[in-house]
Length: 201
Image (tube, helix red, strand yellow):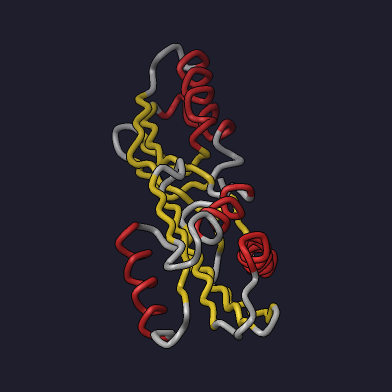
């Protein structure tokens, strides 16, 4: 999955209607709702403030609205654009000021689709990578072997006492393979603990 790094605003005029698109990175549904309310207040005089937000590592929280446009011509169109780009933790709002010329259902779909796509294209997209913070406790006799296997990872702490404790950051998908290798190479004489899991973009 991917997300956006920074907020983006784009604008286009279609048959005298003004379409302003906002993209915001959001971490929670509450944050998405708060940003949406900000834009609704800012553009209280707009004809429509259509939106979609997708939140969660697996894009499991999602909501969209046509905000008065004909059903299926705005909210789901915005969603389809975000989903096609594998985006999550993102809020998209397309604000429309009606210019006096009706676009028809097909025209609205094209307008909301192109407005969202324009904003996505302008955004800085980043992959969401899952990391684990791990602590290894080992004897001094195994220190060289352990350090050799951790050379490509970020070491965040080392403690030297009766044994050596090393805390490091590793991409989550690599954890089990590294754990199996180290347990095998040290003949099951290390302690391997996952301290926390987190995402980075």
